[in-house]
Image (tube, rainbow, N blue to C red; front, side, top):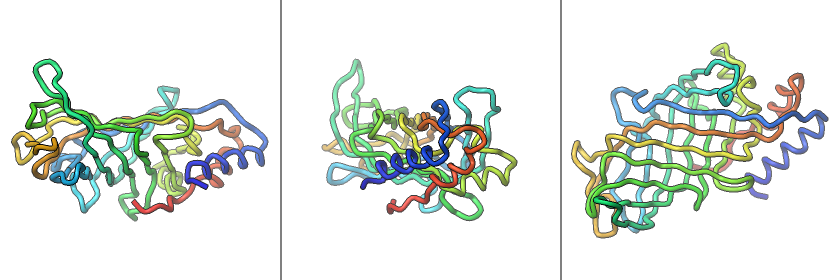
Length: 256
């Protein structure tokens, strides 16, 4: 059984046990581009074999950001959680084509990124990015990237992006005086998306050069803001929410 099908099956079982199912809930998750004021948000390596790796800017250390969680523009004030960001994405070259006076470079993206507890390093919320669901786009010249681009993806009801919450998210938010269940069920997402908006993309202060395969020729970095949206499976009623969250929240078992 796949990770996604296991989650969906577990959510259905939990809802049956409780016997109360409410309307669908949604959550917005974001952070600003310059939360870490002394380092770039994202970092990448020189490409080879048709691909390159994208990590957080402080790799091998995590990157401090403030995770903003909102109840889809509902009545709750936005919750702010100091967390660490860890990124492990791989980009594969797809195409390059002339667009107006520039060139659009397109890469498929897969892997994961996660937000972790800054005190313990424990995983709080992981976003899994399946192959074929996401892309990096950036405009430049035939031999260079420009300074702005994006990494984004989304899914339908059964594939693409998975938001996976660990039990520690509820505990960590509670330690900050936040009842995270007011911002969504944090059970299993059904419609999910994400986007990193990239600016100041550079290699040592200059443009990122590209080789004949349209891959970066050297290490590079970029500032990046993040926004994501999750529609959760129909959640139990208010009185049972915490119990079912405890049943369904899980610790991710796959290696990043």
